Length: 212
Image (cartoon, rainbow, N blue to C red):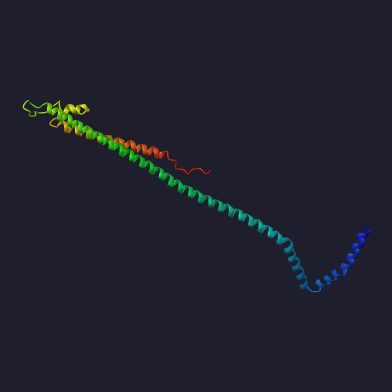
């Protein structure tokens, strides 16, 4: 303990003269006081304020970088979402186009079948009318008049068509009936295919596929 005290006293003795000289220099001129105050202020800035400012600047820089990273991530996600949406629109358009092509092809096939059937029925009607007319010919080989409820009317009756109405030829009446039935059937098939296309389009998922 005495050794430490003696060392302290020795240091105080060594610093006494420089300290007195410094005080004498400070108070020798008022400008020296200002210089000392300025030196103390600069030391405070250098050892206390500047490190604190550096820490604050580093914290602000870190926050700015974090916010910028968040903004960059949001922009990247927006770009990915836009790409997915474009692909989804292409997928939906392709699916609807395939549905339309399929239904148009099926409708064309249906209409072709209906028209072939109508032509077949018209041919059968004309053949039965000609056969009935031939059977009604007289003994001299001269054909006679076609009975109102026989011949072509009977042939038409085989297909559910009416016989003679007024002065209308039964064959003509039968063909008119077949034509009207064909138009109605075509319209019905068109409506059915339109409904099928609408139902198929409604089943197409319009939202983008979820990402794994």
